[in-house]
Length: 66
Image (cartoon, rainbow, N blue to C red):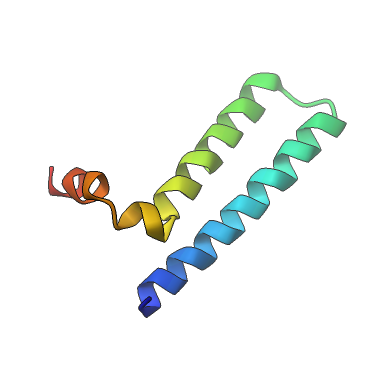
């Protein structure tokens, strides 16, 4: 793995931690359901896009070409 992959791994770990933290926070506290669902969805997408394994797939490389 090169330095860029390690950087994206760190970003994915931070986003994953934020996802788990916010999911537990929204379960425990009264929050707006729609805003929480949107926040968790965005964190999930960012985590998937930051994953180094996903970034090396053929589908991701084709996505960048378009």
